[in-house]
Every structure is written in structure tokens, then in C-alpha cells.
Length: 326
Image (cartoon, rainbow, N blue to C red; front, side, top):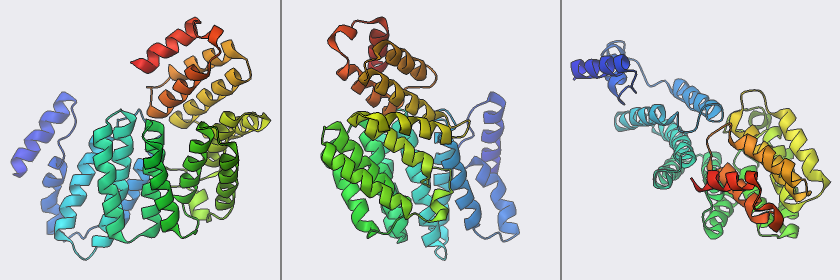
């Protein structure tokens, strides 16, 4: 078994290919058993945080192979280590959620749906209330950008808010942000603004451990301003411009996805303010920097649907249609 794993590893490295899941673990297992190495929960939790940090800084889909390999590793540990089952379930929920996000970003809806189901079940089995809220809110967020049924998205946000019991955690602001975005998209300004006030109250009550976390499991001021930018751009008004500028100033260099999305939101605001040519060019430039994620595709679709009739034949508008239909 170890010899086969070693040959697989050598062949993969020589060809510049992905290391087969489980091969490296099988090679190292003998040493770990010899030193009676226990499961290092802190090490696994650190790996989850690392993935969460990288997911917005690496090309979409680039973490799928590594996440899959680690989920296989956690699955093997769950079979033999009942003493730390709760911790391992919590880790597997985090890894599965991140894998589901990656599947969604490359357009693999079936993979995302199946993996979100696993993430939810693992979170529930762990008994970690905050994690149960986060998984459902994050799933709702991804479903929103993927353009799934508003009823399904609303059910997930309602479930997340109910499970939270009103106690602020990293998942709760996501649930309110999705609810506000849904209302803004359907033109329900009153509900959207009310929900944004609720989001603001939740944000103010978040513990420092959540607001200081720059990775996907946290919720800091940059995320809050990002969602303000999106909702208030849809609703219109001067607050949108302030929110976009505020969010852009808060994201550190290397945060690729959120910044590209903000630039599309900025383009959306320009077009709403009748700066159509500038807004189209701005959006097109943002889309050409990175692959077209579900969020950028959805926002671009909104731009194209709301373009003035006379602007729909512009070259930039035609190019945006081609990009979003690919």
C-alpha cells in the first residue's frame, strides 16, 4: 500500500500533476503511528482558517483538490477517533463549506448542492450553534449569487436567524445581508432598509474575535461596507457612493474577488447615475481581470437588464452580453 502511494506521489510530482488524495497521508502514516501521534485538532483548525484566508486570494476553483484531500483525511479520522468526534465534525463542516463555495464559483451547481448538504449535517452533528448558523447563512449567500429560488434562499436565512437565537456571530450578519439584498433586488425598499438597520445592529454587537478575522469565517467592517455598497447601489442615492469608497479603502491588497465585485457595483452605480459609457467600461475592465464568478455574472446581468434602451447596442454592452452568456 505504501509503495503504491509512493509511486503515485512520485509520478504526480514528476508530471506537475495533483497529488492523489490520501497518497501523502499513507506514506506518513507509519511514522505517525510509531510516535503515537494523536489527532492535532489545532493543526486541522489552522488548516481550515488558512483555506478561508486563501479562498478570496486564489483563482476560483484552485483549492478544490487540496480541500478534497483534506476532507478524505478527516473522514478517515472520524472512523477511528471517537474521542474527538465533535471537533472533527466541526472541522469537516468548515472544509465542506469551503469546498462547496469553490464548486459554486466554478459553476458546478450539483457539486455545491451536495457538499453544502454535507456541511450542514456535519455542523448540526457537532452541536456548534454558531457554526450551524454560519453554514446556513453562507449557503444562502452562495445560492443568492447563483440565482436560485428566492423562496429557498429565504428559508435558509430564516433558519439561520432562528438558530442564532438573536446572539451575534459570524453567520448572523450574512443572513441579514442576504435578506436585505433580496428585498432590494425586488424593489422592496422599506424591507431592505429595515433589514440593513438590523444588520447594522448585529454588526455592532459582534465580538472582537469575529470582527478581527480577515478570513471567510469572520465578518469585519470591510464586509459590512461591501454589503452596504451593493444594497444601497440597488436602492439608489448618495449613500451608495460612500459605501463603495469606504469598502474599497478597507480591503487589503491581494483580496481579489471582493474588490473586483466592488468595481462591478461601482459600475452599476455609474450607470444608474446616467454615466452609462463610463459605467460599462468600468464593469468590463473589472470582469476582464478575473474569471466570471456567479456574483459578477449576476451583477452584470442586472446591469444589462437596466440599461437604457439606447445604450444596449453599445460595443461595451455587447461585449458584456457575450461574457455573461459564455
